Figure 1: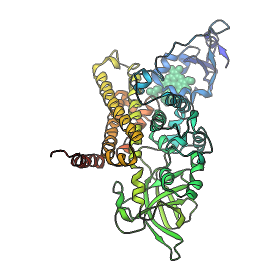
Figure 2: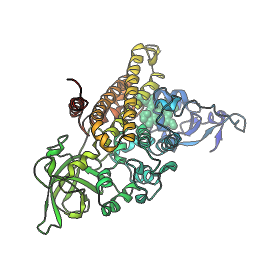
Figure 3: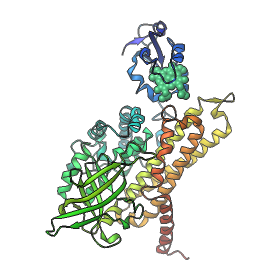
Figure 4: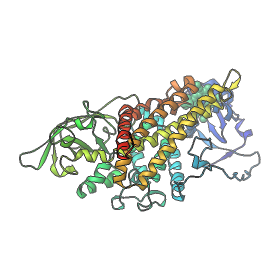
Length: 514
Ligand code: HEM
């Protein structure tokens, strides 16, 4: 990149030719004068100068990577022709270094859960998110979908294979950062999801994560070959269709029917599904249907395809998660080959339940990072915004808010890691017995913490958090995304109730003297 001295920059300060230096880079903003949302006058006032400090007061630094990149013409060099090479100081921590803005183990605190392979994955995915996702999260949410390109990039880099670890025979691209299925553990999954959530958008995260687990764990080999390779490479998308207008957390009562044709070769599917994540973009639909009598024992899971006549998707306008394609889906006499059944007939409830704990822990992991994002953004802002002659952070009331966020985030993070460790070490049978209750309670706790942090961060940002885009972009968006963590995947109320009921059951099993 070309290098300019500040003296050279200072010669460009008229409306016809205006340069500004920000954070060591030089921008030619002549063509941006008319469009600049902060007005033309302020750019003219700072034309020809290093306006890094003033810029920091009013902007989300991300815009330098998105909008700013269009005007970037070079970097700010030293007055001498040759830049002196400055040796960076050995960083104590990984990331931005904001205490509690990243997990403790990034900042020198010892953890038993992570080894060199997790560090490597963390470093790769951070670079990917910073370059390919973070600068565009706002734009994608506003437009209401993720560009096809990002699925392909994410798939090609191997990350889609890490969401639920996929056997190597289905992978078109290798797992990232030298990982193999053999060395992969649930903490790699945690690191990946956690780092992905730094983008500060539940919509982006859900948009990228598809509904593969039922096929992966219970599909026939033929179905696996048909669906998994293309979904893991990012070419196709698979969604999970359980919830209906009449049955949300009450899964056992779904009404969509699948009736066998007289020749026994096909199912005819009729019914509706609601709030289906990725439903607008999906090529494959794993659909919970009623094939038998009432209740959990009459449910099966079927694979449907967009190309099947009678399947229609309609967009639902939601308050958050704007780019995850939430859909209302109708099935009118959709003819589905019998071989598209996932698992055994009338055993679908087990297939659905099989992944519930995994999904709930995943949501807790996301809530931990989203809470951190809210805290980190508010923390940074409180160090630059002044009110009543003092920085926000100098007001005890603001420090109280930040401290209350930290104590909740850290305790949630530690509990989440502890449960992830159980999923790594306990057998599936032991997990079913021991983890259902704690996982339900963790999931409920995580959305309470997330909601608290989003609220408090929004209060610190004030009016900026009431504005879409700009400095509080992430906080404003996450505040809207919170409901997607408090309701789906088992609402807070159902999770708390399940947790309490499991506590009673476990006490009896433990032989507690009650
Ligand atoms: C490459 C240069 C610049 C770009 C790309 C840029 C871009 C933007 C954008 C996109 C916004 C809308 C709010 C947001 O999304 O953050 C904005 C607002 C603003 N900008 Fe800039 N800007 C630049 C330079 C500057 C400079 C040097 C100043 C000087 C202080 C400035 C002052 C402002 C102000 C006061 C606002 C309004 C803030 C508000 O609504 O609260 N900008 N700018």
